[in-house]
Image 1 (spheres, helix red, strand yellow):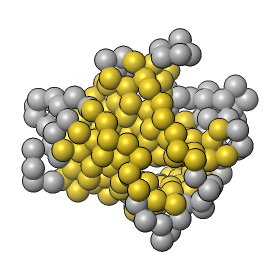
Image 2: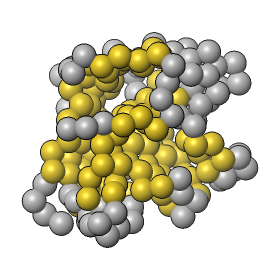
Image 3: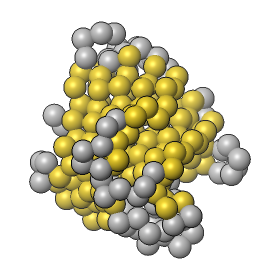
Image 4: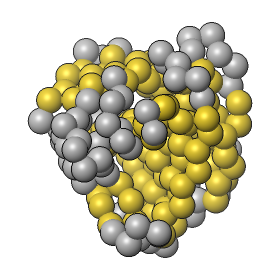
Length: 191
């Protein structure tokens, strides 16, 4: 399984079971809505799947979040105008489970209040145009649905990028350390 960086961070390591990243400051993924700006410079470590492939991706994340909007989790990406990111986002000195869905160049954002767990588990399942996003708080937490989102299906000859992402968009962002453990992608038979 070959992985590639989109916007490789200055500091990171991968020991095959744990990926550790120290994010670069002033990095983010966002398109237009409300804030009026576009950023496509967050860190994304991914592998490519056929564009019409169904799959389930899972990961456990731990972060030392400390600056507004520090974030990390999973990402699905067709191109700069069509992607989804989900995971933890740090807002008002608190962790939130967060999802940003960007389709046709416009982002939306939804959050769920969580109890700032040491570990947030994520599970993302794609079947056709539906993306089912779930999260669990803590090592033994039970998965809960966070979002069911539309995401375009592309031709099997095109690639869908799937992987881990992190960023530090805050104005004073110096970056933070985040670890991704047990990252796994299982390709499902259904299309």
